[in-house]
Image 1 (cartoon, rainbow over the protein chains, first blue to last red):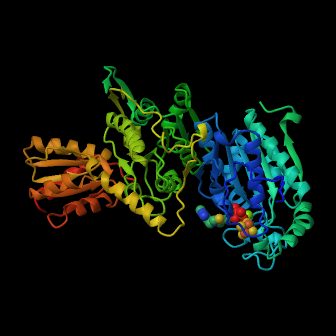
Image 2 (cartoon, each protein chain N blue to C red):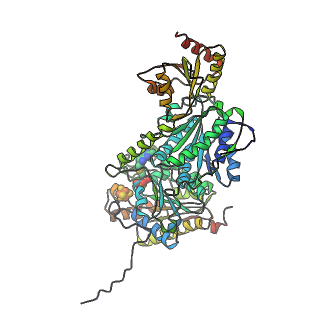
Length: 256
Length: 356
Ligand SMILES: Cc1ncc(C[n+]2csc(CCOP(=O)(O)OP(=O)(O)O)c2C)c(N)n1
Ligand code: SF4
Ligand SMILES: [Mg+2]
């Protein structure tokens, strides 16, 4: 008998629960979940983590990560996370929010949690649409982008301009770290993980608020194949939402 | 309970704040609005002194959601507001009811609708007793009638919240909040500060199973199951309904009034009693659960009823439901915007007594 000598080189992180997700083929939410799961394992955080989940396609994140979690109302996760962190300052608290959730209905909550310098992390998944409700215009929808509520494309004079959240976050006093990554290819995914790790560290060393935006694909509502979606991400989204670190207080000299 | 002999002279708002401290409340989230500002102002220093935390939130929406987060983490927490702010808190209160998160919320009711005024009102009775947000839910609602009771009921509110995993509302008004009276503060003996041991979010320390606090139930039958469970919980509260019955025994006419209006009506009852007129007062202390059985017992004795409220007629619905098929209640409204006085109540009470 031939002995099979397989070596497992890519396993599921322990913090990610072994169950099928409800995401569409080619959706990037799953990649973001995995990166978080890997970091919770590597940084030994899973047992002290409290998640404030949000409303959007990722509402079931709490079914996929093996951590304590509370379901927040639409847009309110930064306030819920504030409450949890103030109640249990020794825990690791994070939110995971879409662009409709964070940059539209939850704009007040994200701005003020960031400005207060809450020692929490925010993972912001920007796919330029309201994914869960069927692809309506989001605050991040690009000019000219067709959605179910902008069938002729987003018009700047009628609908306003796409909001660049990471740039805004970087201007706020309480923010220790703000960076934008992308989940469209392996290189960017690796870089995105580094950004997330840095943001997590700013909480574990009690420095302040960490914010990471992840540009993500929604092939279903973009009406594209997963590969076309990745191309759109590179050709249209990244030029408008440039990648990189926008604020890092460990380099800037720190907040007080 | 260990009573301390000390007496202090404080506003209703301060009594509520001190009651919360005595109940080992550890997190407070507020936003300025008159006439409840004394509460967040007091808490901003005392909550920190007590080893807890205070946040002035960016809005009532945020304050109520911070409450949801802190309470989900199993910590005794509170927020307070007044009517316009209460409308904004309803979203989070609905989530707390749905996901069974225990917390205490204070409404120092002011005039409405809209911006209304900053004077007293009981216009938020329906909102407070029907579940003011979306979905089919209720929460405990306590209505103190004086400053001592404001202190006592705040302590009680935390116990009820944690025992029944529910938001609890303390409903006062601008009179109660701003009125100063001497009270005797006391400390509850054993406060179970870790009351959420088996459900609270504390992290999966020691590798325990993860915990999830949620109100989304998509699987077939699961939301119906949760609603049934909630309704059974609400039904079980009926035994906990409380009221004050003052001079009711031989009364021909019972005045039904709660909170500050109950207190004003009591003055009128005292005056009529001196004149030998057989008037009594029925003052619900829990507005939800409503003291149906106590009221029904009075109706069974053939008494007549007059409900007086500082609104256009809200609690009178509950009075009529409680005594239906046996008796009915007349109603006298004090329009929100007008300040109620004991004198004003004499004529409608006399009219009722004389059957006019
Ligand atoms: C108060 C409230 N308003 C609206 C909704 C409906 N809703 C659910 S998800 C969603 C948008 C989600 O979009 P986004 O945050 O971008 O997340 P995505 O699904 O794209 O990941 C909306 C509007 C809701 N649940 N609650
Ligand atoms: S609709 Fe878009 S965001 Fe939602 S699961 Fe599908 S691809 Fe992902
Ligand atoms: Mg989106």
